[in-house]
Amino acid sequence: MLLAGHLAKVQGLKGEFLFHSVMDDPERLEGMQGLFLAPPHQDLEHAESEPPARPVTLRGFRWHQERPCLAFAGVQDRTAAESFKGWSLWMPEAEAKLGEGETFRHEWIGCVVYIADRKVGEVLRLDPGPAGYDMVVMRDLRPGRTGQRDIPYIKAWWTLDLPNRRLDLNPPEGLLDVNLIGG
Image (cartoon, rainbow, N blue to C red; front, side):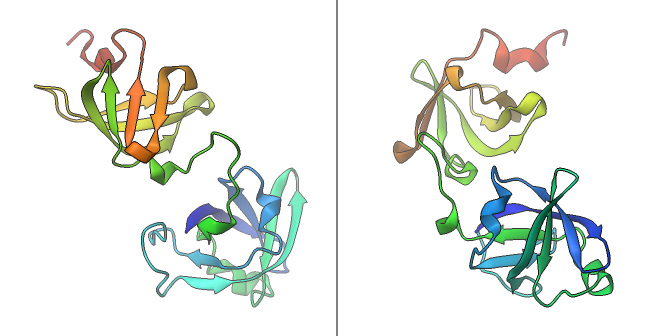
């Protein structure tokens, strides 16, 4: 399953939600089968959908002040909707359509990071970052180093070989040691 977004707040009296989308085109949710709602603590990316997660069918999609607004079958009014505020909406990975050169975040997890053919780290996750860049969160595997490093995904710095679980990084000098400055 892939995270589509979060139900931000209840909108109006008809059981609609303002939706905080993490997908590029939330309008694609219309007519999509296999959607699930889950509380924010329940991660369906790597797990089967178990209670309290529940399958849902979209009964309405519209834009409200430039934000997606969703309604689900079986959630007919504001009172019924309140208990789902903050829940996550998940979609089947098979419904996602990637463009040329696009990847899923979870495909990066566990990939080994190299600089000039020298192993320097392992990807723990990708996080949305400031300025619109994703941040590659890497476990530092360099000798004598511990912890994590957050490296912006700037396309010119990275060469991806996901089938071989390898990422080559060509960062500006000192980027991985920025936290050591002055210390």
